[in-house]
Length: 177
Image 1 (tube, rainbow, N blue to C red):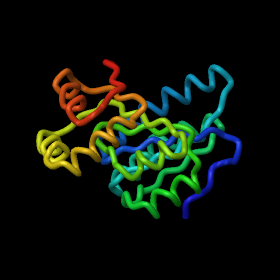
Image 2 (spheres, helix red, strand yellow; image 1 turned 90 degrees about the vertical axis):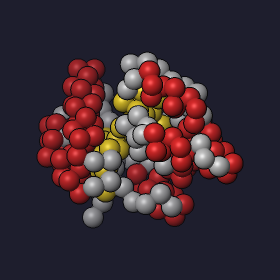
Image 3 (cartoon, rainbow, N blue to C red; image 1 turned 120 degrees about the horizontal axis):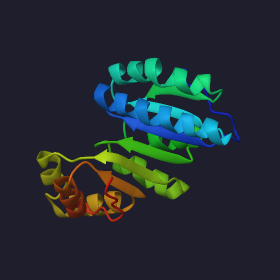
């Protein structure tokens, strides 16, 4: 069963779609944990993935590093992007910031994060040509894309080509990494 984070500890929500992205997330969290220890600060980490293999990898690689630093950590599957699920997620975990790895940008999640004042950062961002065509396909979907991608706090694309695709779907706050 999910464990609630401590009430007065800022929580970083890190989401990765699958095993490979989970490994990238683990590296990021280890670096953040090391830096926080050096500064004498603390935060909690909720790691989520869309696959059981991704959650398993995070539990094995990420959680021990955070726990060794004396900070709260948990890893869970992220529920479907529906208003009820997303609302319960934000109410239960109360993230201070969300970090999405690569390509997991969900409209309901981003809208709720914006409503709650939670900045959403996408690292190593990429978008397949197929997804680009879907997001740019019709009036309603294109409007949803512009709202969703425009609401992201910071996006760090993998390549210049990814930057061009992300601008096309509505990303505004792009930083080259």
